[in-house]
Length: 338
Image (cartoon, rainbow, N blue to C red; front, side):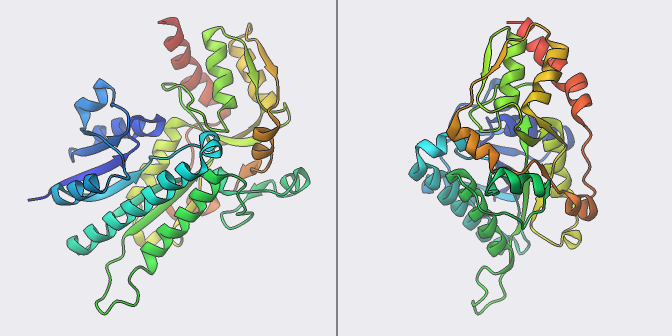
């Protein structure tokens, strides 16, 4: 008999580790945690750990045969900076990997007779503003505006949003029998900041890198200009958003893709807050023109009014509280112990 479970891919990453902890605090349902890397010991104690590749068809068949998934959190991805260096690999991981899991979820939805919830974190990288004048004119961008990504990662995310919407509403629409659609729900995140994991190569990581370097007493050369502005979110709010969207009644959701955000800062404002907590921080600016151009194409802020109306989203952490209560105390403790 298949065992009821929750599936999390990319479970060893920043979002995955925090999500596992939060789910296990609230639920006794087993969590199947998949990652290419070995999970930390704490995560292995909390989950059914599987080290493997989501592109492995044999692994997917094993999952289908052993588990009945009530929900799938598909976090595994090749991040933005690395994707630019290996676009073919990024497409395989980010698109083919997602398609395989959508098929898994669709098969299980059919077998269960009710939809599997498929939760997909997308990214601000799905947007592409043509120039700084447009970025200034459209200060808060809605979900359907400026969907012209400039990176392979952004293209992958936007396409997978569309794939998920297709599977949720149109999959097997010409089949003779009545199809059972999966329940696809997507969040477009801003730049995420974690106090407990080191930044891992995202193009928005100049902010977190600045903070971690200051706490570690190391100099840091920021790879964007001082005036660059994008939205950010503390990791606890990212987890809150994922769980709130998962728990929302399906009847309340009028769309499949939702913006969520918390606070918007320029690199200079981020720098000033870091200096308030770490006055000796050695932060300079050495813009990487290629990465700079990518960040310039992202909105200065996101309009998340649909999420607020339809499923009660609101962040717990504005910029001040994020730094004062979550980021600085925990990051300071991390480096004081090293």
